[in-house]
Length: 61
Image (cartoon, rainbow, N blue to C red; front, side, top):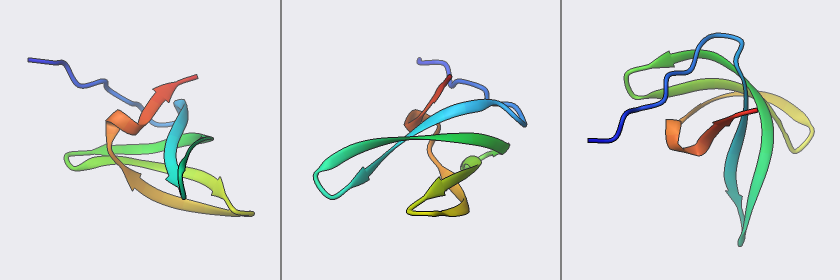
């Protein structure tokens, strides 16, 4: 069974998301980890957003 990576508040991460046909990396900060995902703060298309993402989409930086 694979172990899930634990993310802590204020961790600096790289979020990998799809934009059209491309996989785009975006630097982000972890707000908190919940049972269904990780809440991050990220700047996307010129505005800062709070987004819930799957842990598999994140890597520590």
